[in-house]
Image 1 (cartoon, one colour):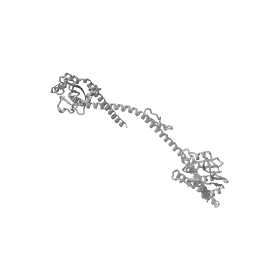
Image 2 (spheres, rainbow, N blue to C red):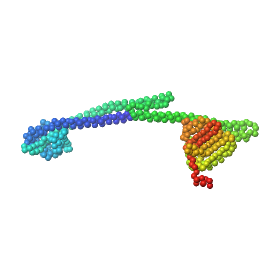
Image 3 (cartoon, rainbow, N blue to C red):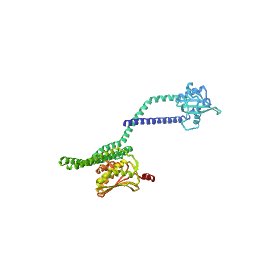
Image 4 (cartoon, rainbow, N blue to C red):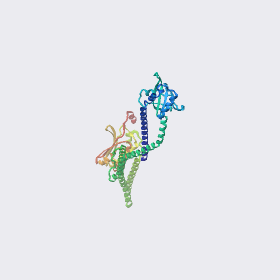
Length: 493
């Protein structure tokens, strides 16, 4: 980058100095031409006055050439011509082939005679399409009639020849000096720019080095954010601070996720260990006991523990599938009463065996959701409710119109839930996944973790009201619509 800056600075300074040099040279030439034309403004008039033939208005005579020759010897930078009233060259002291422009522009001559601001440029008879400063005077005969003009070029061919020779001699030296000055100026400019531009970068580099020390001290890494004289560096520092803050948040989130995952695995290991210990204990008791009278009871208890273990493993696999997003919801519309009837038939025998009254009311409503995923939600909630509802208790599932929307309520008269358990289940709903920050849901078991994840997939919020010893009410905000008259008649038929 510094090499490119150096090269660009040198080229830019060289170009600027070259343009400045050309402008100064042009201004100098214009000033010189103004001074010369001003000094020799009346030159042609004096020549016409002192020459007898020119003073008589004679424009073409052999003697004029000798007079012109004498004048040009005294002033080698002048070229003298006589013109007829139409501007055509008549007399001159030069070979015929030197006259490349035999016609002189009279408008420039009139501008000069009318005292137009100098410098005024006119036609050079010895150069095509070349204009030079001049002096001119009218030639008139004794009767006062215009016979032509005395036209004097200031800085003629001889002057141009010597000037070109001198410039050619000094041109290389001039360009060399210009190049050296450009390089020195560019180096100085580059040094100043480098010092000015890199000072904020140097401070930024030091601040970035200090971030490591901040991390060692346990502080949140950040940059000052203000670097005077460099708006771009300040913006870069702000962007770095944003990235550092994002990285810090992600790091903290990873730590919380890791802790939540560890807590989940700890709780899961306890849930798996309990039925496994029971299973092994029953088997060991049966193996050591010599009495076969308790064999059927021990086998039944061992089988029950095995089923619990199998259920936990199945739930764990289901939760992993949900976390890996391998399940996509398939939304459809179906009647709530028929759906709850299937759920009731699935849990009726289990509820009867536990002495729990299971009631379900569907009403004349339709659901617009995934029936398979909703079935798994209700299965987990009902299984949990049956587990904690004592004999003689009651579990009710029915829709309720609450706050301008339909919600499906699952209420039981079981042991209820503590406040911290409610916060764990409802915090971050419905977007937070199972292992996200501030989400200790695994403490409530794999089943409720599955409920929360499935509700997230269905974009369904969960609201729970519960007190220890007074039961629990779970509200699912599902999309429900009432059946139309035609749909009611069709359903009845």
